[in-house]
Image 1 (cartoon, protein in one colour):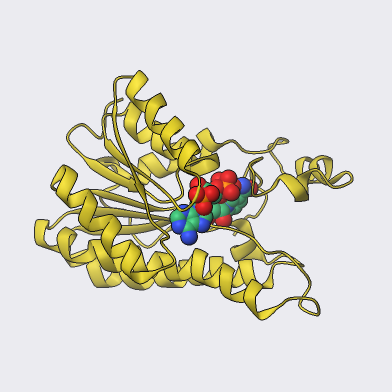
Image 2 (cartoon, helix red, strand yellow):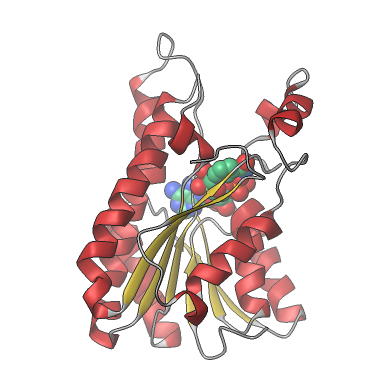
Length: 251
Ligand code: NAP
């Protein structure tokens, strides 16, 4: 499938993990992809090289998307390079897990700024250019934690639930301009983010047992759902949450 021929996509936090998988998938389907990262320049460059090696087009743009001005610059540099933005995938995220009794204010702020404020920052930055062209696809990455909650993740779950409310509201605001806003909520995917949780005790085994489909997810599983929601095939779908979690959380 080449659903993104002639399209331009920004993937935040694409230097590794799920973001890398999304960037590769969109590029494989013909999109020119902006590989955003905050500090992992080598990882981002490797993803861009992988895309070039497969015959695709990629541009690395460093920007801390938790910062309003940096998100504006990310979009401005994308427009300068490629002239348009068709798809925005808000994937950048981090965890600072701890029980509320131990949680420091900085841990709360870091997670809310990176996982939630970044979504506002980037959506705000693409809204005008997308409205002007009367087309656009925004896909925001939430989590099973945002749907079901998770001990030790009050900050993370709050940010990921908020992304859902934000996305539904924005979908209502931008629907008349032919811009869709949807959410993908992944279950457990082994990445740098989940390494410490999944490697602790028998957590991996327990996660697999709690998952009806009996395995952990992959970045490719998530990327397939994102690509669908970002494609023309999903032109009548907006404000929805698509769980990609092997059935872990059924709504
Ligand atoms: P990961 O491997 O740790 O990758 C996170 C990416 O986000 C990195 O590329 C990182 O780049 C980037 N990033 C972090 N802060 C940033 C910032 N302020 N500005 C720009 N980029 C930033 O994590 P992952 O597991 O792939 O997670 C990707 C998304 O999926 C996150 O939103 C996460 O919450 C969500 N998710 C993951 C799972 C899972 O099981 N893995 C489950 C549900 C949801 P730098 O290193 O350069 O900062």
